[in-house]
Length: 158
Image 1: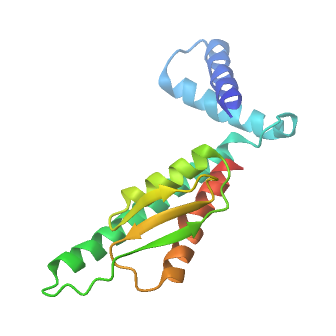
Image 2: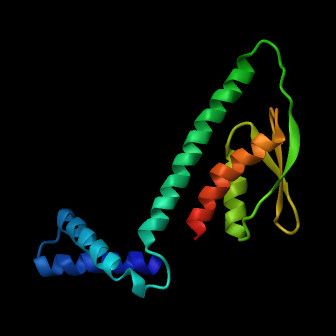
């Protein structure tokens, strides 16, 4: 991916030299033209076209922002209730992610979301033990993590 980004920047700089204009707009036009050229020749690269990975990262960030807002609202509701009827608990989440960076990102995203915290990761990096502030249904919590964070991280790792 980094090779493709550097190649795209190189093509944009070459465009600036060809146009003999050294400003931001010429660079952006060259960058877009470089994207087009690289898209046409994308089959010659070992990795997939880097804009797909960039889109996957942006989607992951949007999913995190949505989950962050929703969990903040649920924590605020729990705090503002006159009675505490929360059911805290720790549950095991079995992940299909295999790379260390993927598990680290997943653990951090879960921990950064209010109301949840990754307490432990098993020795084989397969099971994350998660503490939830209010867990009504374990399967619902597991499905929520699998269908949001884990799925988006797998798209980034492709």
